[in-house]
Length: 285
Length: 278
Image (cartoon, rainbow over all chains, first blue to last red; front, top):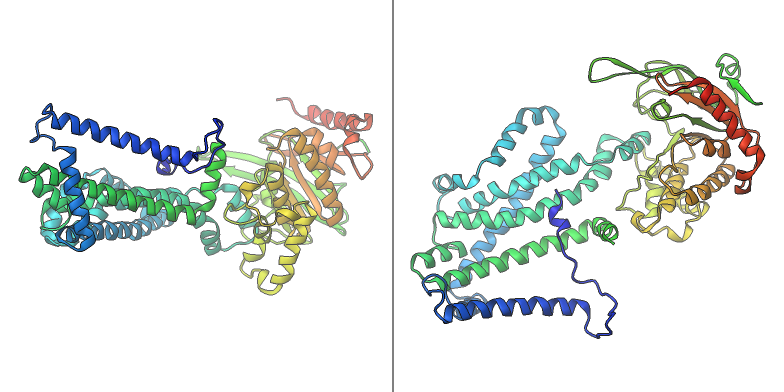
């Protein structure tokens, strides 16, 4: 359930420079990562410029970078690309918050009301097992070609990790902590807010981290199905016109959006669930 | 003095100065298979005010079940349980009993002092409402008492296992419960820390004057800490013998090597083997 949180690499910790080097370890890590990027781009450029890979299969890296630079300038200056960029960003963010609200609500109801859980759990599991992408054409019919059908698609995909982690988190309360609370005469509400909800928070945030990425997937799928806005639409149009450099540039922008949004969720998690970060760091040592 | 077969009839006359009175207590669980498991059978005991009594026995003898009933956490099947003169009813825990577990169960999002203060903030009528300031001060004093005055602002994950358990002890003392029920509180600690904690616990018990009901499967621990040891055997869980410990107080670690200590351990062990063949 917490794979996202666990898989994280801590690159920022200053370590003693055993070899006497004055360069801090985070700077060396960043240097290493940039070297890999330059090497990959160089290989890509060499393979395409030499004609080993035809340009109708893979555009030249330098061409993609030129388009990307142009796109970024447009986004900053307020050109055509900004509209697409902002549209997708809004879809992902609203899809994420929709998933959080709906996912936590459904997860909480399922874990608190046992009768509802018994009645609905198989259908929730079945819905989770259904590829929601199959609903994309229907969502266009129901919710139109605008933002709404994209946001609904994002929620349809991203709400499930939140539901499941909410249930797991609310069930994770330590048995002895419950005994303690009961022996102190704590009310049901007190046990919920002072023990069970804080205990569930690390699980919730693991779900949120997955949800932000799933929301991006849902938004792009939604854009593939119809409409004339967003980076997913730009990618699809460019591919149809065989403008592969345009397509790659849009994909890079989607990747940057996803990366930054995910980082934001991680930063909020570290602030809110500060004890989990510290506990993990200590167990990892 | 010496080993005596546990006879509830002789240990029942006076209830004055007695904090815990248990008579004819039965606890039967309905297992999932439909059969009944007798966890406790005709258990009777009394603990005098300020006394340190240990329940010692192997796993499955119902020690923890007995503590849960004393704390009002689970229903009893038959018998009477009185703490401080009041009947204990399941689901209506009284603040006369406080619990310490094998795990410290501190809330990791709260500092040490906030954990100690936590009991004041829960309940139908949280004590913090009327005695907030007084209990805040008491929480800080209790951390001093358990030797963690300098760690009030630390989180549980910044403390060692022994320190965490000290915080748990301070938390159990906050509301001045008459009876402190301890469920193998030092079982998860290493040997050295555990021996330190034994001396610490006795010092705190001496200073605070609560009645201690301590559960363990460690015979040495029971001999070192207690005034009286009640020996339990499993299937069904019952008290089979009572051993008075004749070591002087205050106790210290030097006693662990003494002949008198060895003799007390021997008597507990003899009582156990006389009634139990696994």
